[in-house]
Length: 336
Image 1 (cartoon, rainbow, N blue to C red):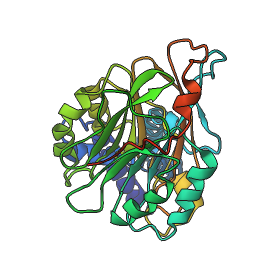
Image 2 (cartoon, rainbow, N blue to C red):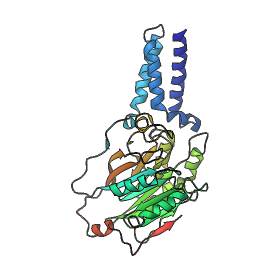
Image 3 (tube, rainbow, N blue to C red):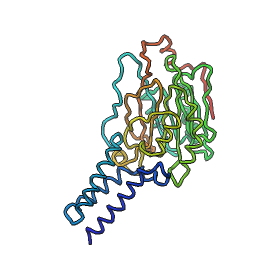
Image 4 (spheres, one colour):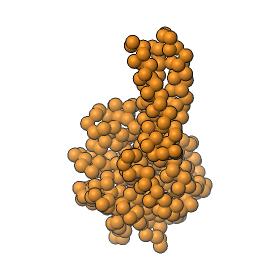
């Protein structure tokens, strides 16, 4: 009887796992894809004792399926070391982007500001920018005077983009009409790069599928060289993330690893059993070198630091010092 119960559990898990591979058929199936790692591991655990029973053939097939499913998630499997996507070039400047879901009601905002001050990224993409965060981010306006804050209709799930490098001359930062994306062309040593922050809603049965369709215009408007980061509420192998990449002509960066878990659960559990839903996309003459998760700052998401360089071999531009230095006399602050 015990073997029969375990076999039924294994069968149910395999059905859910298979559904996730059919996410392009319907968003309801894609919802299962976000738990591919968890479902595969649970199915393998169920199959293991069945190898010693009359269900041995079915268990063997389930074990093979579990291994094959995990092979599609190798980039996002939990690991204690940072992702190394490409070797850092000796002839190009390496820039840094910090992606953070701030958590709209974060009880420790000073941890966030401290992390930004210590890591000093070139640009920052932010999610869940509530009214509280509009105030808190004002404290670092001298360090990051080039910014755009895009409000969400619910006042909670806004996005923002902060830069210590100026926006390209003749361009204006812009917001998607419902505050799901913030976009700006940033001057990196004389080269204009479109930088975007994105925040998607929850998967089916929530609004994520429809929202991605609404973002097709902003996504397709990104320039030839662009980098976009944000909380996608979707894993990198999901149909949802692949659809975002397709609409923007973007490449999905190998995941930095699990970055989210339910509020209140310990950080070590998030790093090894959480969901890798904070994504980075790029296109054009831009190479991403590495991504690493940073320390907990009071959110249910971990910050992700990304290092990248521009694809054109670079002897240090004449205006590099100027573009890397904040000017308090000409702050370009925009609010969506």
